[in-house]
Length: 497
Image 1 (cartoon, rainbow, N blue to C red):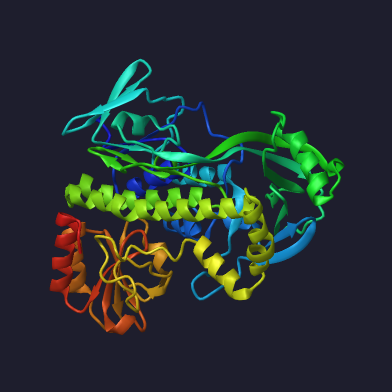
Image 2: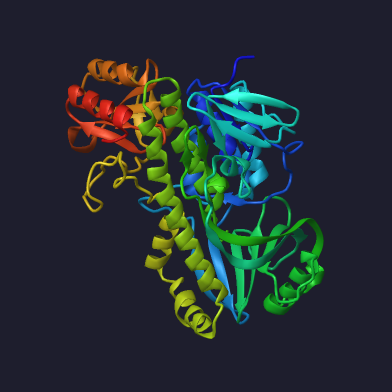
């Protein structure tokens, strides 16, 4: 067997999405995981709108919207009384998709099916023991054998072997000592479109609806001296904090304890080894950003690595992966840590501020819209990065900004959606009436034949032609094919606009 171009380690959402993105671009890839088979437990919950967009562009969203629970509100109680209803999932000018609650295992199953349709199966029971690299390839040591690849991507979680083999530091601090969770069948007196939170002093309990009849996740920081078994502790908290008798909990499907840390890799790349997802950043689960941030890493990395492996781009393009995604992770770490501190209220002053200022503000429509748009991850822009095109506060769509899922028309006149054309492809958006032949020739010459979808968009921005990256962000806009060619040369050779 010829050595694969890329080996991805870790078959969670990030690793699977990375492998799908690479295969869609025609890259040879192997996906290894040390587990004996797919995980059946729920683990991370839900897709923010940006996470759903990534799966949509990869062709892996499938039936997840129909199978998930759509959340309409977060109901927060203080000292047993409902104090704020934070409405989420309401359509705004920016956010048109709802937030979806489902098991991480459901997301993984759709991605595995998509990857299998592309001719790649996960290689289970393949534990990476060590890895080394030279200027030409990476050598991976597995149990009893060694394999080689041109590139190695570590999507293998907080204890990443790839990160350790690459010698990349992972500094950070613990945020909360211990958290308890249990997925249970229970008849809670809470609407099924509602996440319920109860706060009392330094205690907190959350209940999240899951797909399935009367299925809920209970989660809380472990009280001092709490037993190792999460279920009885959570049932006691349900009775004490929510005034709901523990008898409503009929059985537990999965329980777990874990520690929350805040860590960010010092770099995302060391030579031919790269990191993504929890291998590069871990943070509090408050806000449901973890899995979605990893999916964003995967999509950003896949199209860049594909261009480098085919020789159409230099290594400088890969440096833009860290330049764009590490600040995004740092922002998530900052916001989720602040939210954790505010919700848990570790001091008397913090609890007073939470109960009398922060929680009441959640009921205000403007605050709700701002929080919903922030948590959706759709406000993310790479405008100030190396592939961006303007100062951070310029008006209008600029290179690095996310392009909405526009309604477009193919060359033959059939309607389509922009995101439906993008998996591993670029979108060349022309105003109606402008011929596309010369534009397509320029794009194909730089990006590869067949890698560009030529589309027409009525009322395009200021009459410009636009080139949209495979991850849905604007690469360039203008009125001259020659200017497009010069910009693509700079992007591919120098990793800059």
